[in-house]
Image 1 (cartoon, rainbow, N blue to C red):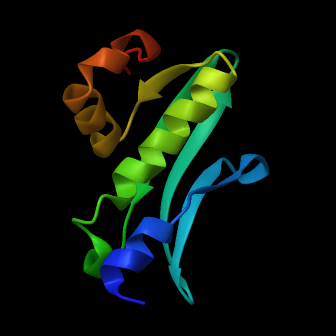
Image 2: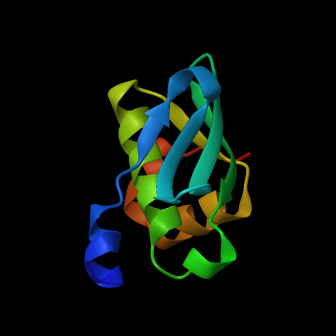
Length: 101
């Protein structure tokens, strides 16, 4: 399988009990987003992709999963980490879902 085809199969997995959305990239290699929920707010605290996997849109896939999660639960997203703020700036159409940190 080529790297390009493999990238299209990366699917975010949500672990609510851990406040974690992750994508398994290879044995022991993960891209992840850490979040916490406080009442009606979802704080995006950290997004991380291993250096050798950066630039492939993986953090964007994680944020898309976080946005879907927040929409389903009627949560407002508070972008604490820099990537979450960057994502918000690139997607003004989602501004109704976000609150400033």
